[in-house]
Length: 77
Image (cartoon, rainbow, N blue to C red; front, side):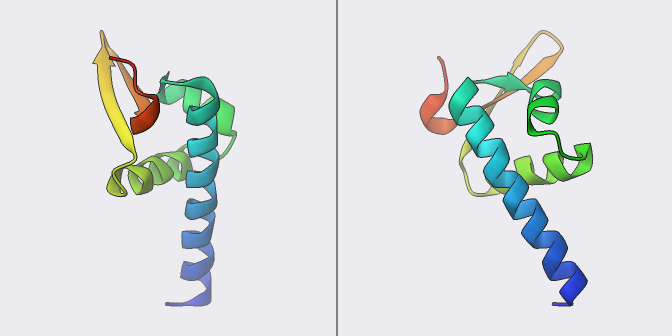
């Protein structure tokens, strides 16, 4: 893995940690709310959400046109 690639992967991992903390503190949020609260580039936040989803840490739900994301242990039925 190149140094640039390694750096980018590390940034996505760090952003995944920020997303996890935001969801842990706030409960389910829609994608726009997560991006605003994490305050990182949209693409990076979306990749971080994918990272957490791949680790099976998230639950996705839809309410109307909004898609919500929650931590599995914080999900509301």
